[in-house]
Image (cartoon, rainbow, N blue to C red; front, side, top):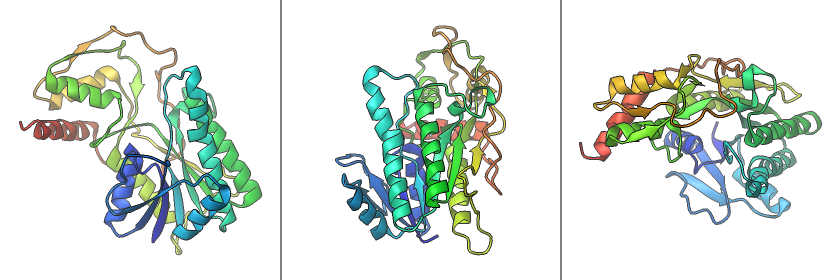
Amino acid sequence: MHRVLLTGATGFVGGHLARRLAGRGVEVVALTRPGSRSPVPPGVVAVPVPDRPADLESAVRAARPDVCAHLATLFLAQHRREDVVPLLEANLVLGTRLAEALVAVGGVPLVDVGTVWQHVTGAAYCPANLYAATKQAMADVLTAYALRGGLPVVRLTLTDTYGPLDPRRRLVPALVAAAAQGTPVELSSGHQLVDLVHITDVVDAFDATLTRMCDAHEPLVPAPDGSTRFGVSSGAPVSVRDLVATLDSVSPRPVDARWGARPDRPIEMREPWDVGPSVPGWSPAVTLADGLAELVAEGRAGAGG
């Protein structure tokens, strides 16, 4: 694997993956939103996504990628009417345009990303929200490109990701910040489950998949119908209450949790949801306690304490 085409390099998971690949000498070309002010990691070449299909094909051809990782996404747990078009453009239109270009330049292998929220109660497909539905729509589109265009496709289904340098407004950063600042945090019942995978392990899973897809001696060969899917799961979901208890065990100051201050969402994970078999040769290595301790230490260092 010498050259990787990447979308989502300015995001949390994509940024960490780009830093990993560039740090070991892989050439990373990142397709970015036109006019984006978010910088890509050092050593990564940023190319704005062209409007014209022929220009996008030319950009992909110029990158000469061995493999492509499509991580760009727009996540919304709940959407408003004005969010419908942005969700479709980010999660369906961009990926479809990319697949078209990858086929046009010879069928560059593609790693796409799914979400556990496509699989409520572990069903083959049961979306929790419109975001999950758009991710499933992208999977269906890629099935067409695999069957009719010969595009090699592997999908990694993610659960909950966390770790350092996370700009997202998610539960774990909010809890760590609340503990550090001694501020109360309003939570729901806390009985729902979260399946947390540290970003180091997430990147390991992507790295292993991309590497195997380029391996001449023991390649990962996707099914021709686009059905190859692996899960990136901790294998040990915990309740939000247990998550807070684990954070309290590694933090100098406990979380002032106000349980029941917020209602539970209509759909919650109350039993583990199946995301498929793990990436071959991969298993999570960072325990939840160690991952949270890293974030606590990072926060104390940033505060000068």
